[in-house]
Image 1 (cartoon, rainbow, N blue to C red):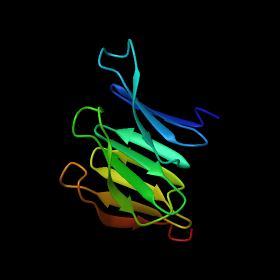
Image 2: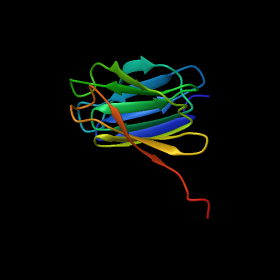
Image 3: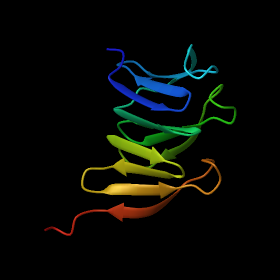
Length: 123
């Protein structure tokens, strides 16, 4: 159903459904909303600034907007399962089977590199 997952930042709301992920934007501080994009379906989603991360079965998909949410394009497929995703600024964290992988961008989301693999020490 529509609204399986929801994330919000400033004037962008991202809504997950059984068939796709939808991006809505507001240009009047949230008084009205319009659909800006339809992205691939994912298990989880996150949004921060000009980035939307969609957790898919075989990758975390990073989308970016250069124009305040008017258009969105795929910036990266982070090579891991994307069951759980989070984004804050220039950092994306992706929950995998036995670790959390951390990725970083230095160019507003155009390119990404893995900086850490977080796991417990077995305690």
